[in-house]
Image (cartoon, rainbow, N blue to C red):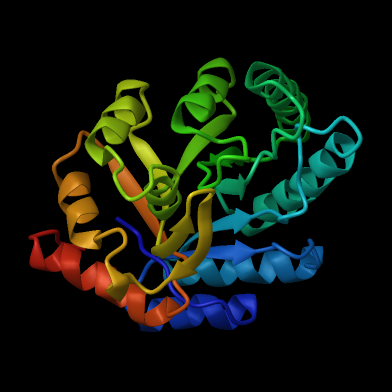
Length: 261
């Protein structure tokens, strides 16, 4: 059950993750893919040597639901996939987009079409990565559990990325986490990539991430759910403002509940 910590420069971040006794790190390309092939190769070597599992978060400037932006958005995701492949990262996480003026079913169709095209490129180039569609915390944004599972059902190159805090915000602090877990595992996703943090929200959904100490949501509830689930494997990525501290809080809580790393 890998967990993650800091985000300094990539190689030193990987080393710090290992020094903290953690075993996963998400490389953030959120403001653009600015890593060269050589740097990606070095990061991959460091991760393999230290036993740190890597994933990548693609840029925030993505909207597959907008015909005028979908092409550029696909390029940003595929650029992220190329660097992920060079690093040996298994998942490229992204938010698919915003509904805008589209009906939800039409947005689903656009995301499905883009993912099919990107999956074809990934296969042709032999990249060992999956497209990780992240659950949303905003009502205006594509990415309910149901929408993402539908995309993943039709495209084996796609995998759901469950952001527990986003779902807490989306359901106004009253999510059915057990039902969500059952839906995900029932769809055959037994190796799961996830994010966790505290979160602040309004009647429009997600507002900003917070430290785990706020217990919105309560990590102990999610930890018990994870340990009692049918999952074979889970990666927990901290998105807390207190990154290192809260990564260790999660690790310690899981150990307290009996998990052995």
